[in-house]
Amino acid sequence: MVIIIKRLLSRFLASKLLTVLLGHKKHFNKETFLNLVLQPIERFILAFICFTALDRLRFPEELNFSLYNATFEKIVHSLAVIIIIVLIIRLCIRMISFLAIILSDKASQNNDVSDNQLIVFFKDFFKVVLIIMGALLMLRFAFHQDITHVFTGLSIVGAAMALAAKESLENLIASFIIFFDKPFLTGNVVKVLGITGTVEKIGLRSTRIRTDQKTYITVPNKQMVDTVMDNITQRTQRRADLRMEISLSATATQLDDYTKGIQQILTSYPAIESHSAFLSETGRNAHIIDIVYFTTIDQSMDEFNKLKHTVNLAIIQLTEKMNIDLAASSTDVVVLQK
Image (tube, rainbow, N blue to C red; front, side, top):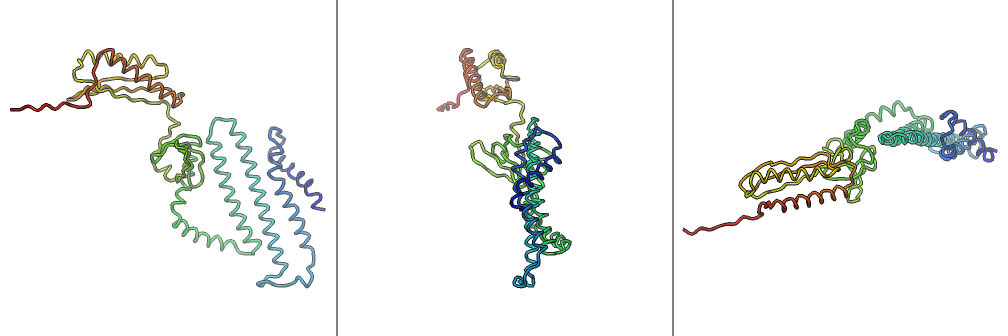
């Protein structure tokens, strides 16, 4: 009878459970919820009714045997408890996945990526907590163990494991720091430990990065927190530098006009938001003119490189037009005979 009506009964219970969770909101797809919880509810109903019926039966003498001081009836009872606990934990995990979908749907309406990041993190975290709780419930109700002694033993074992797995514990703590301090988010381009790439996932122990060479690396969260990290996505401008070494034959007037001409070139490009060109130093070998300009962040890397190419050519043309010589890369050695 249960096998025949389990689908109808499970859909009824799932609908009531959905109403309790969401009220009468109609914007969420009901089929998504049913696909997640319908099968676990069916199996739970079937197992619960079957084991309840078996509990009311009197076992024949042929089945009344002992195995390692445990009767067949106790073995069936313990097995039933284990199966029911597993089904309950599985249903709870599906419920957590459903709640994560709801929260992700709400978070997608905002531009803050950190909300989705926290949802994924806490979904995995609570799944681990539920599995641990399920194991403790099995010890208590299936194997009739006093879990207070288990907790005492776990505390001692946990202290020993914490010392042995010190780095893993540090990475776990670092993951919480990352999620609450938010030095970077999923999708950000970062540079850490000399590696540049896009953050694809932040886990409980490590962060996965897709590098600019399209390789996939794993960096422990502790290093992501302790190491100096450059969040390239959070920059407000792109910077370009150019260093011109002018021959010592150039006069002060030429240097001043040349610097002003460079500033006019930089001003003529709308993508350049701020710039500077100045005579930074002079010495025995050359006059040094440093050129620095910042562009908008909206540019792609290809557009930025094209702009640098255009600016460099314009400065070279200005150098040729004003007949300014660049400092020689080699020096002449003159030997005088006395």
